[in-house]
Length: 277
Image (cartoon, rainbow, N blue to C red; front, side, top):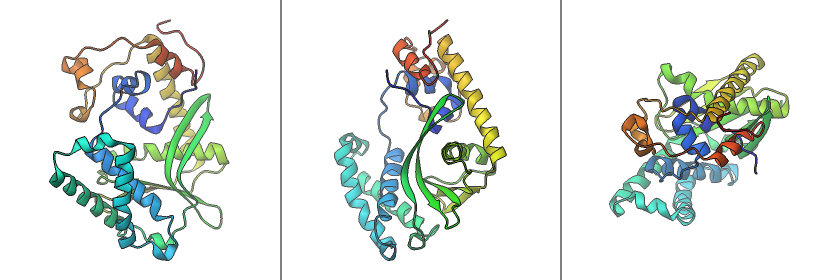
């Protein structure tokens, strides 16, 4: 049995709705692609490939020139993405939105002045017996060794009320790098292309130690839910966008039997487990 790991996305899923977490992490039910998700994938690919070019060539025009080839690549890997569009007009409107987001990036950062140390870095580390895993969009390293973690978002920046929630993912990445490299990242930066704003946090080791404790506590809650076989549904304003409404008791749907193999695999993050006992 392969060992499971928890990512920032799945951790956030459990905090939002344990049943949604179960369907994604335990049942592993496939979800249909969505226009916003596919657009994010496309724009991320363009920005990653942009840094393959020499610094002087990283212009807005060059970035826009990368969009069509990356769209073709996405279509070849995920042909089902075409089902998102009713016709050529809808597709072209969607591509125009993607181009606007790529252009917006140049109003936030100047890629000709940046030389990322790593892009789309897979990070995996065991923390307090829990295997954590995630992909970081970009890691920058200053000449003095200071590290900045950068993540691109194709939506709009959150209101102040939801800032801490938005930074959850970045703290997760920072914790992993801290435990891998022994030095806390100097800065965490979210780049919102939807409105051209950035959100930053300069964490210290005390902050990351507190976050580590919260992740350990969260995993204990996940583990308890898995052992009890109880992942309750939790209503939220995000329910209309959930892929699993037809299987949600909050909306009158039946909940399928919990797959024992999925539970055992999940709990393999720490140790084998017996469901319900």
